[in-house]
Amino acid sequence: NRFRGTLPDLQSLSELTHLNLSNNINGMEDNGDALTGSIPESWGGMLELRSLVLSFNTLTGSLPRRIGDLTNLRILQLNGNAL
Image 1 (cartoon, rainbow, N blue to C red):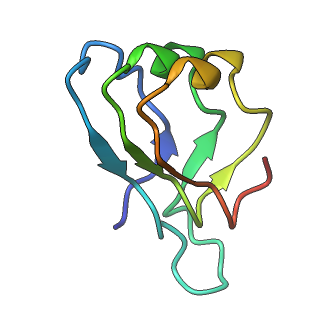
Image 2: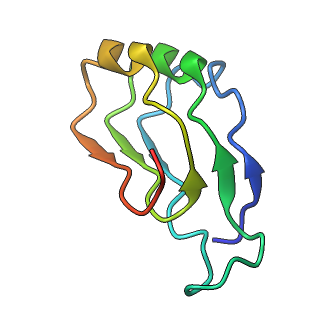
């Protein structure tokens, strides 16, 4: 992928089951092609989410408390970030 910028509020995608926004860093160089910032608290409202993969971006901060509300979540991959 070549997404860049902060993670959007996706709360309106309440039926979303899988989200993969991984591998937005091009090799080891910081060329600006990466998702930055923190995971929005509102993502805890995507209750159908089963898989959330955000590996290898430049995300920072803490996991939102509401991530614990995602009882269907089976896969959570956040490696390669500064969380």
